[in-house]
Length: 162
Image (tube, rainbow, N blue to C red):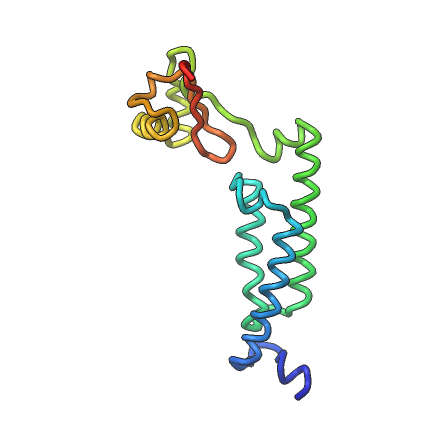
């Protein structure tokens, strides 16, 4: 059997050829995830979601022959390296971090609720109460000192009695 028999070409791939491509792509994707770093798949900020979405959309195409295999791998490698370099720069330079990741926003502080921030981040008072119950084990957002929406979209609570 030749490599073309196992690998196939174009869109006319049989089950064995797609299986071989899927097998190889699994390890390529694993290597790309390792290169991009743990935070890409753990933190889920907008910056990190970009690489997850793009890789998910692009890496499946060579398996079924929608795109050539190795050019897609090369392009995905470039995307992962760019993501990693920007992440490293953001960790060292606050201005880069601010541009790439944004910043947290106080929704509840000093007894005042930021109504505009609530609308901007599409949050209700019920969302704040739910976060307070889960994190601070209190029943109402007014029972804590501060509530922030973080760059990941998660709410974090600063408990005044903690």
